[in-house]
Amino acid sequence: MSEPPDGSWVEPATSEADPVIDAYKKDVDRTLLRANLARTVEERIRNLARLQRFADELRRAGRDL
Amino acid sequence: MIDLERALQELHRGGVEFIIVGGAAATIHGSARVTQDLDLVYARTPENIARLAAALAPHSPYLRGAPPGLPFRWDAETIRRGLNFTLTTTLGDLDLLGGIVGGGGYADLLSHSQVVKLSGSEYRCLGLARLIHVKRAAGRPKDLEAVAELEALQEERHDQK
Image 1 (tube, rainbow over the protein chains, first blue to last red):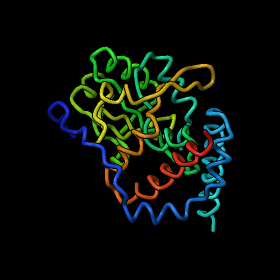
Image 2 (tube, rainbow over the protein chains, first blue to last red):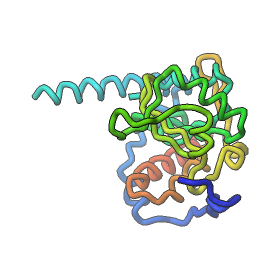
Image 3 (cartoon, rainbow over the protein chains, first blue to last red):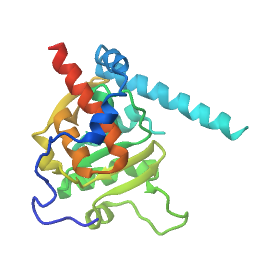
Image 4 (cartoon, chains in turn red, yellow):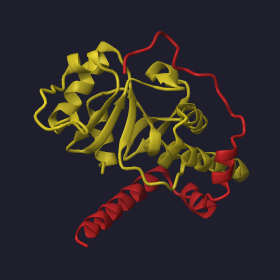
């Protein structure tokens, strides 16, 4: 990817409703979001690291099936 | 899998100017999605490119998905000639971006970023509204679900105020 002329990649903001996004939004588990919002940034990052390690373990276990 | 804290610390220690974007930024804002890599927009000044080259060199950066043995050299000249690099490193997968669609480069994003504290150090992270904007602008199908979650987060934060 080469660098475009100045400013050409800063596209105008669009916040129009998107029916696909709205459809996905109905299925967002907001209890998880509220739990994360109650955490500090450090806790969120460490929680992500824990989940990454767990996902890694699951992948490793899956390879042994 | 990326060692997020260590990768950030290494770049911070090297004096690299960057803004956390992508899934890690979403996590910082409270996303529950699990990201496997770290996306950063770095400043394209000659000084910062030199710092980035030096900070990452000990971690064996190589082009992700490329066959082994390519004559890829991680140095300031390579970074200067390129823009966006998707790398594997000993720290994990790292995407170093000179710019992003809908957001531009480091200087464009700076005023849309906010400072977050992690392990005693301060980092710049793209603000939630701009993160939603760039993900919408990218327009990739895989981003739509992420945008839905980020917009839900924005609503939740608004409701908490």
